[in-house]
Image 1 (cartoon, protein in one colour):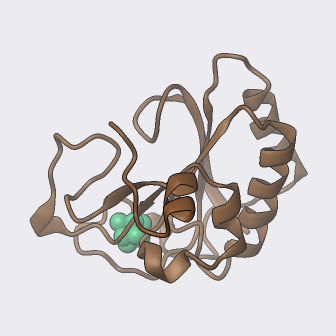
Image 2 (cartoon, rainbow, N blue to C red):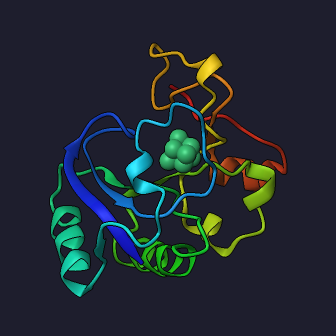
Length: 163
Ligand code: SF4
């Protein structure tokens, strides 16, 4: 897996102050995507043990609410295996921290993936320029859903995260 950035004390991509991993690789091709540099799975830098350590050092801080996986698409075939393993490990090591994930896929396309068992929130769906709304928290366009994953899995139908 490759990545573009690890941002810290991020307030825009989930609840509270977060560490955000921006992975390389996305095949959704949304019109007016803000981050087309992240489309190429060969772009950016290799994600190694060093980067993992950097993320864990952030999660060790009491004021950090958790991690957000973004990109690119963390569920792109180039990323899904490693992002799943990382989410699994973070869930075990930091049970009190939250894990958010942004993806261009729809919930119904990802519901059976192993990774959803480790996630607190998924923001799903492509960015649709015509539905762009900068007043919405945590998402770029109104078609995207901010999904409370544990409640959704329990209820068997989509439950939205409270804003
Ligand atoms: S899913 Fe995100 S990164 Fe991928 S093309 Fe759409 S807006 Fe860009």
